[in-house]
Image (tube, rainbow, N blue to C red; front, side, top):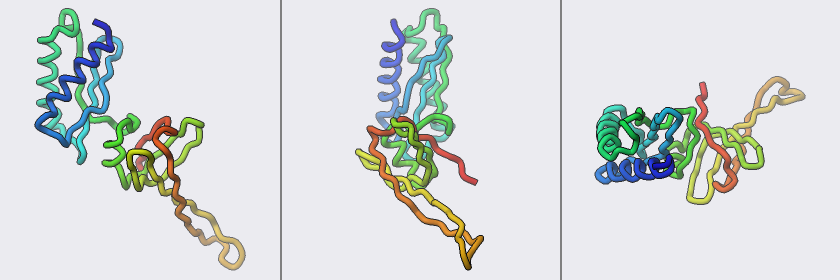
Length: 164
């Protein structure tokens, strides 16, 4: 069985596990060298470790019983996508409205700002631009909010940024 078939089989099983939890959704299944299966799941309002544990156990049992990997030679990790993983699905954008993101567009242009809107076609960022005043108010800083609308088909990657 090739990797694509294994991924599709695992995706179908994960989706069936979520039938009673419509707030949960599959983000991605990866199989990396050494048959390490990484399953990224999320939920509309975040997902807890307590919720992930039973999914991990049931998915592990399914993979074992279905003999997707000869001699049960695999490892399984079920987790929510970390901050180092880019947003992939529309639902992820919705749940992250209000957070600071970095968007790299397909043309290489990078935009940063607060994600303020997402619909099926595009997202909107609000960037806070600061500048120092000259003249009698020299040294004072003023800020301006600039909105950027970016179509989904122009996005190469979007990552959550931690702002302190």
